[in-house]
Image 1 (tube, each protein chain N blue to C red):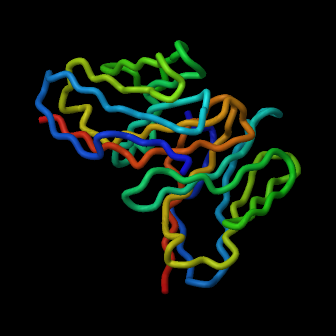
Image 2: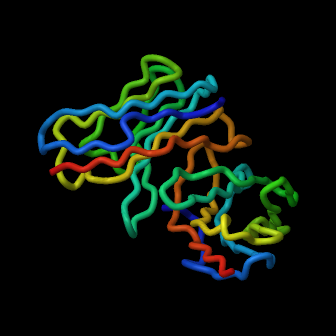
Length: 113
Length: 107
């Protein structure tokens, strides 16, 4: 089944403890992206990647890092999480053209205390 | 900047058609119009997209104005399972989500 898999689904962590949220897709998509969703603010893009070794900042990149060493994986790294990064995170992937839609993962609910 | 404008919320009765409007008056000639929906506790789900012509698929229809400055997502017979937030997006090598329209379907 074609899908985007995020792990973990739920995570509670403490301020300053580095964490990684993994994202993997099995559709050979070039494009991958991370979003965060907060009440009243909708979905905001954090980082995106057009292909392997190519990443760019989205609208809210501060406090996050990403890497794209392989086509299928696009992990989101929080080096020193803070409470304002408590949010619902979504990973998405798509082919590189505007004709195709995005496939989203099921989300990761992160709480930083 | 999502660059699309949608009503915050709409209501519909079950089994009646629903027309969800979207304004994208600054759309460029190469932007595709995409629609997604997000059911409670789930990730966004692709619904339909188009460029200039009206489009139909098993989920919905998309009517695009001749000047492309607006579009309408049409759900022909709303069901309770269609209650969701619907997002209209200009796809130009990247996608920015706005607040979307929260659709409530009443039995």
